[in-house]
Length: 523
Image (cartoon, rainbow, N blue to C red; front, side, top):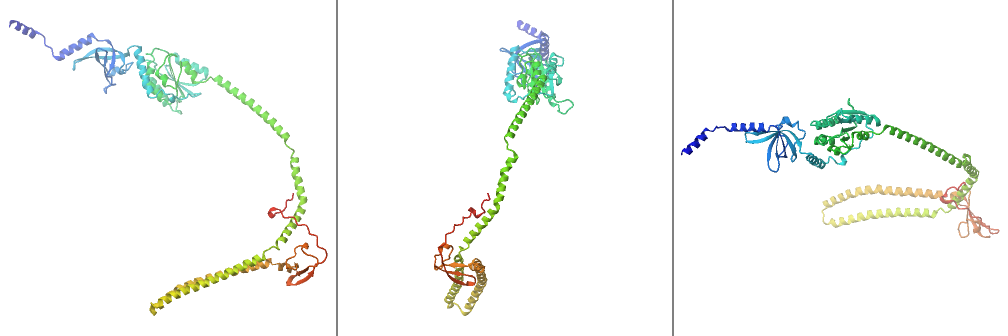
């Protein structure tokens, strides 16, 4: 019992602390002891900035983890922004969060844990942007051959801008616009992005001319110094630029992400200036050479054409020689024109004389007889048709006469008369017109027959000679001595005659007319 009482007194005499007092005491102890620390670990659970602007994540290694926070005021000053899975060295101070009895590190600055971590981060970022197609060759645009205005994004005080301006002045003096930016540090990436976007917002007709080409340049340095040109915002600004861009960041061995997305990568700023413009002296010499070649070619061509023209002129005949043959043909044709016309008239007269007797009078008479026969047939058929129709109606009337009353018969007769009367009225004019038309055709054929009748020829003083067999005598060789001939004159007068003397010598047959019945050639 005495022992238990002593223990109770001892507990009772101990100082009492509230939870808040203990938490504050621990907080002061931790902050005093670890007011400035550098902690190495892998970032885990990073989801970007909170809506308040603060960032919360965890630093961990294989055995432990610690909560980390970056206040909004410190976020803008970070050289490297936190990324999930990145191994970093965080600089800051330890503190506690009394509400949950946890300790955490308040980070002021972050840096990758060595070059290996930076290279790993750079490779991951390169793969991500490449997967989006930002580095595809199809997106790269050709550089203008001779840009009028060149925009340069670089530091205005370094040796880079002096090298670029000096090289441009040597090769081809151009209008250069410099957009000054910081080329390293935490503001490098935002300033480069602003410069690229600012150049793209220039208007071609604005007070400051819009560049035809951009050069983003910086001198050499470590990977940390060049990190601003590896930022994703810079890469996307270059990708969306409508102005072709040449990247010239670092030395030939330095490579940044802007080199992959730009339209051309130059190993050095001086090489970028050389790629931007051609050599003016070389262009002038090239143009002069082309002009000289054109002049020489023109002279040679003119000389060749002159020689060919002279050769062609020497081989051409004289104009008088060209007209001599044609003039001779015209004279020959003119001299033969009279005889050719007389011969043609003679041939035409002979052809008409041979054709006139062969006019088919019997064919005309036969045609007239056919028309008469057809007309008589039409009259007979129309008469027979009318008689047949009347007979059929009479038969029908007789068959129905016994079946109808006189009144009905009178009605039927009246109806039949009413039906036949229009038919007869329509038939009579048609028949009259048909007879008139046939009569007119017969009269026309008779007139045509009379015009072709040989009696009209006899009335003009000609005679028609027939032999004993009544056939026409057409040629002297058709008549034998002593043959009785009949000579018919005009007005149907006939004279008998007897042929005497030796048989006549057959005359030459006239030359047949040329094909087509046209005039013979005058040539």
